[in-house]
Image 1 (cartoon, rainbow, N blue to C red):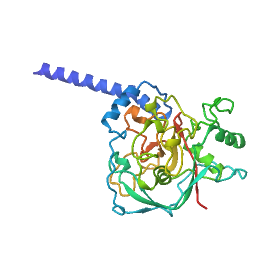
Image 2 (image 1 turned 90 degrees about the vertical axis):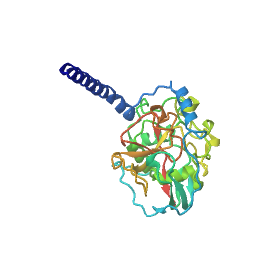
Image 3 (image 1 turned 45 degrees about the horizontal axis):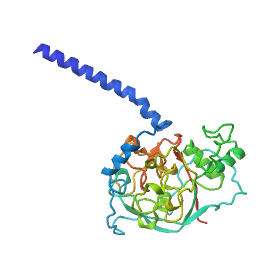
Image 4 (image 1 turned 60 degrees about the horizontal axis):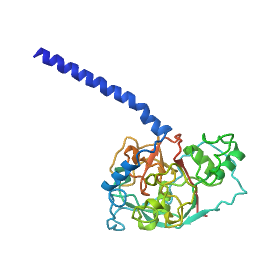
Length: 323
């Protein structure tokens, strides 16, 4: 009996050591993915197989009849601006504020979903005042002007403060939340709030994707197409949102102003909620489904990262109050 107990203890100790070793071994990998990931494009076939289980629209989602008013309306018209970065640049008066911006009219829209991930719940109605949002993601050409005028540090994939050759119309990448916030303020704009971004992407009918409710891999720069990187902003005419805005699904994830907090009326509690993470929206050419987070293409999807995170799939666009 003593021999059996001793053997069991040894086995348990060895198992415990193995588990601790694996945690130690993979901890850096997890951190690397969330700080400065290096992507491998060998998972396309596996992702295609995942889609068979996630339905014809690319994920477990079906549009239920939504009864307006069933959930309390969240009126954020008087919402205070969220805390921003400490960057202070003089606004560029020579750049027209509303150039390549689209007016999103005042009114209600459907936000979130009850069908999918817990942090996307509940589906609810939000009322917003009118606002403007960029028609295109901020490009390398746009960002270079900012670098030249302000002396702001260039993204790490640039050389001698110049973006990569042939990438002028591609969205700028390797920018964190602070970089994005500083750029928008330099133009007299701001980062969009999550509610604004989602309304601009879904319209008032609660679309799953900017173009509608049916998944179509040919309407965005997404990993199912086998994409190897970003594409020029505005490449997918058929993938525009109801307001005519480009690349609100795929190409690059887009920083928004908000902290990662629950939706109004949510009963979901996450240890990640709070003022340590900022939200990104829209998915990218490299979808996080490659490490099992779920399909990121839907407009209601929410990603959250430390605001200092930079990689080759994060970008942004700007917004402005309607005046």
